[in-house]
Image (cartoon, rainbow, N blue to C red):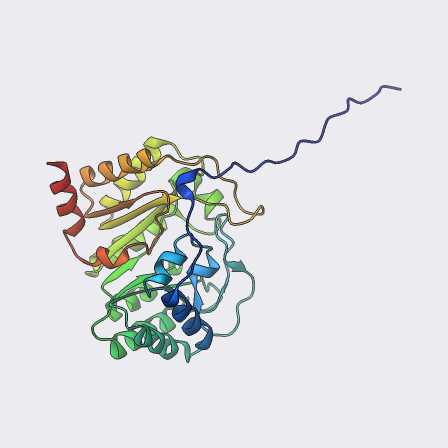
Length: 305
C-alpha cells in the first residue's frame, strides 16, 4: 500500500494594513446628528453598507452619501460589501425622505448612489429621476452628485438621469479591463465606458473611480485613465481596495501613497480635469470640489510651477 504524503495545513494570513490606512473612529456631535437623521428617516448610506474608511470624517463634517432603492443589490461584485439578493419592493416615498434629510442636514453638496436593480424594467431610473428632482426642489442651493449603476447600458434609463440634471454624474469603472470579469462579475468594461460617453454627450459633468490593489499593472491603470479620458470623463478618483470580509476578493497589495501621487500626475498629464488619488480616496471623498470645472487642473498647474 502506497502511503500518501502528508501536507500541512496552511493558514490564510491577511496582509497587515500599513500605517497610512489608519483612520480615527467616528465621534463628535455632528457625527451623532447625521447618525440620528439616517436612523430616523430610515435611510441607507453607502458609508455604512460599503464600510467606508472616511465615514467618521465625512459624517463629522455633516455629509453622507445616501443609497437609494434599498440596501440589497441584484449583482454580486467581488469587491463590494453591499448585500446581494432579492431586493424589497421599490419605496416610492424614498425620494421625499432623502430630500428632507438633506434639507435638515443643511449641506451645500450631497451625494446619492444606489444598488443595482436589474429586476426592474427601468433599472430604478424612475426613482432616480424622482429623487434628484425632489432633492433639487427642496434644496435649490445644494449641489448634487449622483453615482449611478450602468442600467445595463439602456439609453432610455441613462437619459432620465440627464433629464434630471444633477451637477455631477458618476459611474465607476472600478478596475482595469483585464480584471473586470473577476471584480465586477455582471458588468462590462466597455459598457461602462459607453455610459460615461452617453452622459458626456448629454451635457453632464462626468466622473468615474478606480480601485488599486487587486492585481492590476501600472500600464493597465494608465490605459484605463486614457480610456476614461477618451470617453469624456472629467473627474477620476483613485483609491486603495480594502477587503470587506474574507468572502470577498483578497487584497493583492497595498499601494504606497507615492504611487497614488504618480497616478495623479499621469491623470492630469493625460488631460483629465480633476484627479483625486490617495489610499483612502473613495468615490464621494471631497466630491464638493469635483463640481467645479477647471478647479483641480488649476491647483495642479499652480503646484507644478
